[in-house]
Image (cartoon, rainbow, N blue to C red; front, side):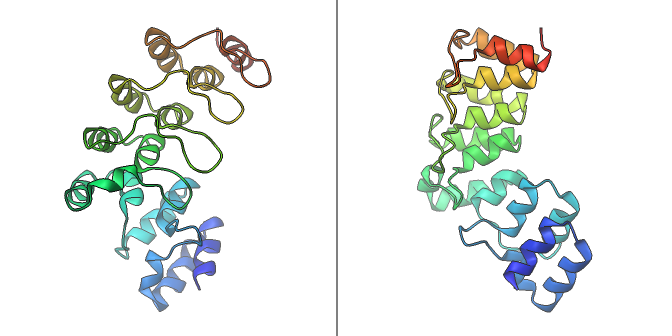
Length: 207
């Protein structure tokens, strides 16, 4: 039945999902083999109707789910009882800070950093992503502004040798580009295939 839940989410079949869960409400809290919740999966693939349906069954949410949803109060409670969780990784290799940064939850990112989250912690899934790269990848300016005072390595490279500045340039995000350059990001670094941030900017049509 768990596989049926994830299949229904994947194809955004709300009716099928509800029929499955109504037979066993605990399935709203089910997780994949690597520990990713149905809720978080629906958020990653951007299926808001599915997410809303799942949440209506009041599933159990962990810190990664809450980081994506913006559950500051609930995360505060978790941290009060288990401070070490800010350093731990989800089943798919991300910290709560990575997740909050990717989904644009600036308040959660601030809370996690204030509680000792490592600004430059690298994802444990081969992507080599940091929280800053996660925020840049989804163009979340508010999160970037939260992260920068904690002095992240602006030239940290993810898989492929891409820096945050290269990503922002490829996406044509002028405001983030300016913040990164003002912070000291190296404009001359090259990715593994030899491209600079300016090369990525040209590809995106960004002058």
